[in-house]
Amino acid sequence: MKGVFVTGSNTGVGKTTVAIEIVRHISQTRVVKVRKPVETNCEPSDQNYIPKDAVALSAACQKQEALEKVCPYCFEIEASAELASADSGVKLTLDDLVSACKHDVDESFVLVEGAGGLYSPIAEAALNVDLAIELQLPLLIVIRDELGAISQALLTLEAAKNNNLTVACVILNVVESNNLSNKKALAAYTETPVVSFYQGDLETFCLEIEKLV
Image (cartoon, helix red, strand yellow):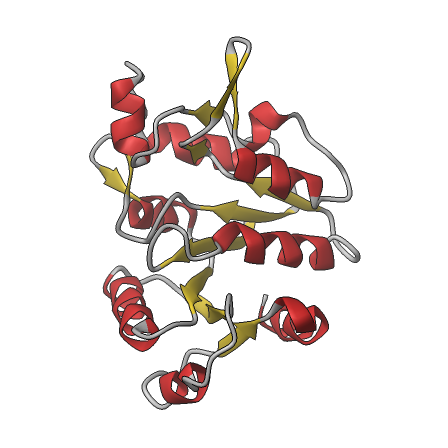
């Protein structure tokens, strides 16, 4: 299995926004498949739920797949995947998620997006980091570029190191312009590449990511 695992320091840091642009760019030269194996806070629709992030990720691919392949486990309540599945009466295991990520990917480049941060619960007695360990894909760690970003990034990098995971890069998501110089400051504390994501200059971001993945 080849590809990347997109994770972050927390929920709401912009993992999906960043992942969409990566998928769009890589899809120009490679067959890319996306997997968001579980999503919570989904919108009810008839007897099903609409996983908004998975829908957006799938739309970024050149070739569309059935949404059931992209995100087979969808839950309505806004909570960790572990809690949301239990609340729905579903026994969601780590093996279920691993199988969902590997299903029908063949030789494609696979972008897997986790749910929440690296240490967020994602299945019964399992964290996102456990899924990353099973998949053994390089991590793309998304951090919101704000006050506290350096601490968040270093803590997540330490977690990855402690679990013998490879990190392709840290992505600082510049949601709002600031003068914090987090990219330069973070580079002084880690040898891991640090890339800025800014909607106003996606070309530079995509070229940097292409070299790393």
